[in-house]
Image (tube, rainbow, N blue to C red; front, side, top):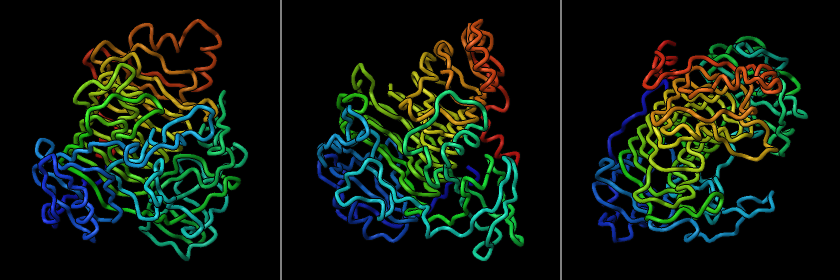
Amino acid sequence: GDLAVPSYPSTHNVKDYGAVGNGAADDTAAFKAALADMTEGVLYVPQGEYRLTDQIVVSKSNVTLRGAGIASTTLYFDRSLLQVFGQSWGGRPDAVDRASDWKNGPGFLRFAGPESLAPTGQVQIGAADPISNDTLVAAVVGGAARGDVVLRVNDTSGLQEGQWVTLTLSDASGTLLADALYAGVPIVRHCISRDCYNAERIVRFHTRLFAVRPGAVVLERPLPYDVEGRWRPELHTPHYGVQHSGVEEMTIRFRPSTYAGHLMEAGFNGIEFAGVTNCWARNLKVTNSDNHITVWLSSFVTVANVLLDRSVGRGSAGECHHAVNVSHSEDVLIANFTIRAYCVHDLSSYFFNNAVVFANGTGLQTTLDQHRHLPYGTLWSNIDVGEGMRTFESGGQPDWGMYSAAYPTYYNVAASRGGVTNAPALDNGQRSNFVSVQWVAPLPGRLMASGDARVDNFTRAQEWFFGKTLRPGERLAPLELQAAMRDTR
């Protein structure tokens, strides 16, 4: 969110490749031909409804899909991923219960590099990891504390001032999780899955180098967590499959259907960013989707000015899986959103995220879902959840640890349709900051002084912070925290 999303002039027109845009003709081949022909630029999609029957994949950098506006340009997908690719029910191979291949992704509109794509396109959320032995430029020697900006390294020959680098940390028998991501605060639920315990290069932090000195580097951004030698800290120059690409000014609509249910999704999945950096989705409407927008293994992604809804009710047991799902990503901003559907998980932060922000949004009965696997420092800022009965309802499996790692922060969280009536779980996350929330009595007093010694001792041990209880219509100033922090740097 530091810099505005760029706006480039149109260079290609999808109608020049045979697209009709009458809502009946199959325009899939025209879109694929246009994207194959482009090396970079803006593919303009004029006013009309474009029927598409397969995934549309942007696998090149510096490519934008631009419509004539939400009310003018529609991409209409009339089938699901289940209908396109079939179903193996392999979406949950580590559990007895079956789950759909398409429960989380991929999207029908995908931003993912060529190396990210399985031969058939049939992948959960496909992305090649941008970090590998080939991207390693230096090992960090010794440790540093949260907030420090100096790291000692074994080699500076591949480093220079102004260069972007990624610091990675690897777990060592659960100590990285407990001492860094959980901030050394005692926990009651450890992550014991193979994706956590002894996982390599699982924690990541991006920064420019402010200076390079003999045997050390000075970071532009302070460290968000401690660094110790036992976690094999390394500096990398990541390789991302797609950079500086995006989608804007259009509606993405799926045919009306009944939602198949949680983990049973048919795969009416909207936009997916997988293994990308500096990409965006803005000024969009996504409707009748199982998963509206997904960000996976990506960095510096902006989603702004989006309406996520359904044209008709999709059933009584929920209408979508995720409105926005951000997983294993860093520096992601989801801003200015409206959710007009009842999802199982509306806004999800999951799987070792760092510096993910959800800001300036409204919903019907919005969940601020910390989905376990140690999302770190998620900020929820200036959000009207609508009905507040599910605000802190989160998902994920118990062996994935606490719902969040340290420092989840809730700022100006309101509920215009009655106030926040449900309490966060006791394993919500260490040092949870409830700065300003429109609680309904007896919350948060029930958590701060419940009369139950076990609860009181636990919340104190977790070092939770409770700030102001907002009155209806009240907000703290500044209205939105991320923008205020950005503007005062």
